[in-house]
Length: 159
Image (cartoon, rainbow, N blue to C red):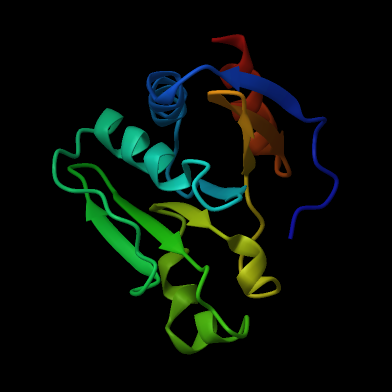
């Protein structure tokens, strides 16, 4: 899925507010067609991160994990954002059967939790975010695999 990534930046997020703030920074620098993989153990805040991203993009409704529906679409004034949770996929090709390819149209943003569950059926991610526990906060590992992702990463770690 991710090949030839940039070196990982490790960012400490002291609390949920810091996690939401970083997600808002990502939203500020986001672009149409952006694909972000969100990885980490259960409970590390992948959906919390998506909520912070969507709030920064202007979405005010409920943000829930699409664990059972696989994808939750959010229509924003300028574009669509798709939040995938692939945790429950038994086989990677289930994403293909569910019409997963249709979401990656180059005009929307895709935030994908548990991307390893659909390995081989997802386009390359611009950014990979790995969340892990760190005392009362989280570590956020950040790497990029595309040129657009590398430019975005430089903006993110520079903010």
